[in-house]
Image (cartoon, rainbow, N blue to C red; front, side, top):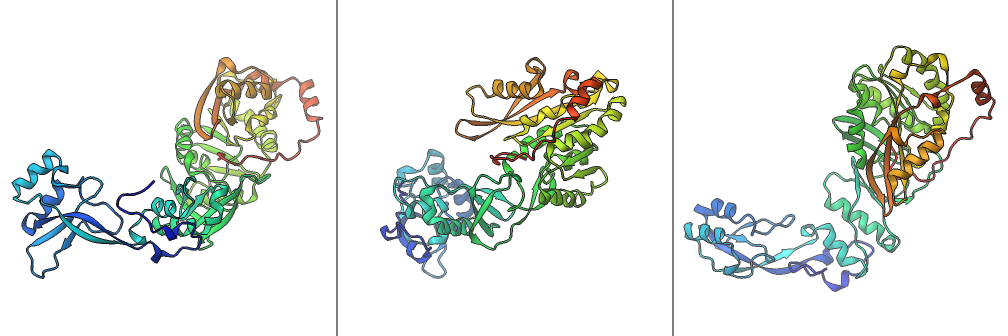
Length: 431
């Protein structure tokens, strides 16, 4: 794509080490000569037609000292002749006695005046996909570069850092897989190697080492949606808690929270964030495999909660695997604990590549539970993670036929060998 205002010098194509001076260019832009007494009114009337470019002023002093006129620079995409002004703009200029005759001003554009897309379009091979998109996590810009962009990775990192105030570190995801702890493997592209991010989400502060835990800024709406279902006095079991984006807001809303994560780093930052938000007394934390957490702390807590008819939420946000963990609820409790009015509500996340993702995740949940939930659940679309790959949340009341067992079933269940530690093969979209 060519920009009428800026056509990059051909010799920047293929640049891999950023040379800012090579982008400097002088171009001619239209301008209006405006008396200073009506300057502010004219600029306000022409706000859609004035030049909009980083670091370029819209109003300039005339060369003659003491002149009572200023030059108002116009956008050459919108204004090419006096007839380019809209009727309202032309009427405003007439009312201020400003001539519509256009001047031409030689504008020196430098690297600092260019947008990141313009720089990257000028440098990367023509016809190839150019991306300047990234996820912002505090001071860190997190990119997911494609193979053809990798030769230019350091230049891309520098441009992203230059063009986005507050970004002081740019990283590229080199691998979606961290076998167990779902943190991305990353490569530094530009800036300082400081991976401890400070972010705010839905009014809550979090701190964590972004290179060692999982955090996805695109899930803030989903975190808020589920937390809004939780009321004061409810109990929340967060099976895959990460650094606390469900657990901490739920505790702040007055819920009692029992939160778990297998990753020791996530567990450490979860505890840190509980203290940071002054909810450590409302959140009990564990560093266990998800299945061990369900069959340990959750199993121990549930009987008393069911007898009190407490409202219970179980959040299972590990989309690559959470549906497979639902079998941990089979025969978890003895039948004498039954209280059908207060059975736990489960919010379980899953990825689906199926043409009918809602049907797919419900079918998989039913299979894992060993009991059909098709008629007793709701499914919420969270986000599209990749082409033909959706993140879904299936919500249902845990069936009593699944949760409660006879003494015989309980004995058989407990005699099974302990499950191996699960490994997460797809980190994208969890937490």
